[in-house]
Image 1 (cartoon, one colour):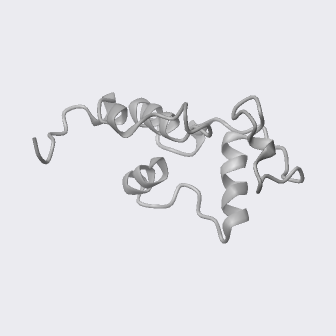
Image 2 (tube, rainbow, N blue to C red):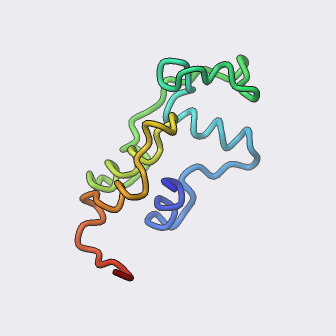
Image 3 (cartoon, rainbow, N blue to C red):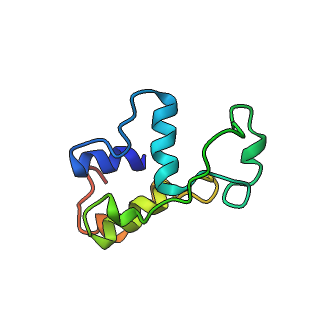
Length: 105
């Protein structure tokens, strides 16, 4: 959901990968390679590769315009661990979307 919102706002893909692994590496370079401290048991997942490069990540603000409310929303949407990620219902209440009237009641 976060990548789609970002692409709609930025008018370009946030992580434009040439293939699945390139896409993952672009995400890892920004957010850091996931590990068990940010996503418990991720290293035990079937497709997790111990050979993945270990990137620390970079400040997200370097990728997107300096709009604090937009960055805040995206960072909450792009959390690795699905349980810690913001829900759609919570996202609709964020400051970035404040003032946008609902399409239906």
